[in-house]
Amino acid sequence: MNNERFQTPTSETLFIPLAVRALETKRSNPVLRDEKAAEILEQAEMPDTVADGGGMAAHGILSRTKVIDEEINGILLNRPDTVIINLGAGLDTRISRIDNGRLKCFELDLPDVIALRRKYFAENERIRFIAKSVLDDTWARELREISGDNTVIIAEGLLMYFAADDVKRIFQTLTERFHGALMYFDVVHSFFVGKGISSTFLWGLDKASDIEAMNPNIRLVRSWSTGDLLKERQSPFFRIMNVLPSTRNRSQIICVRL
Image 1 (cartoon, rainbow, N blue to C red):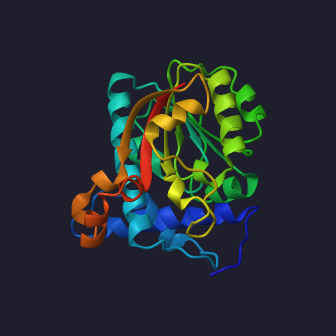
Image 2: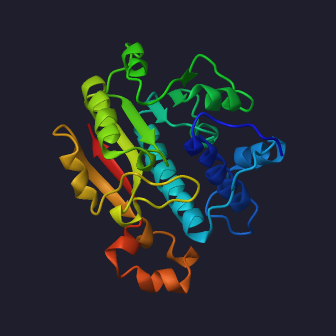
């Protein structure tokens, strides 16, 4: 292991979903296969941070990955030239699972994270990296050629690490610049605000419909409660505790129209 450090503690959480997907790939009955994650995990010199968030976190990561993969693949069947904007890309490997040879993808994260990403992924005419904070709205203005009509925005494992006012800023930028786009993201229940694995969660929602109060130009399309997903992979304790909204909705995957 090396001691490579990042600009924020949140950046170091990028190793957790990578490890979860890589380890899942090695199972005899995987929920999903992610050969690129397994390859990176073998090659990477991991920093001295936690790379295992525990069973509940692993279940949430697998659930959100599976749901968003299926949603994006469905969209690409009808619109193969869709533009994808991946906020807080980290070491996300979705592009290796969904690339159809026609989509365009913009992967955004902090400069030190993008520098790490370049070790394992290459840019080309369709896939570009943006080394900026999601709070620096200049990145959105620079994508002048992109409209919201054919765009899907992903913010996976990201927004819960920002305070509510910053989340509002992010949605304000997105609704102004990418009007009409679909957006997929996950959010923790407000019960878990102030808690976390490697970094503290700063923002959460009780119900998916509460997202519409963040910005008048957000419309909820669909939501999934983690407690209702991959039930066969949940412990008996959590299957029982899912009767509680805070447990069933401990993490929700949300789709909105901007």
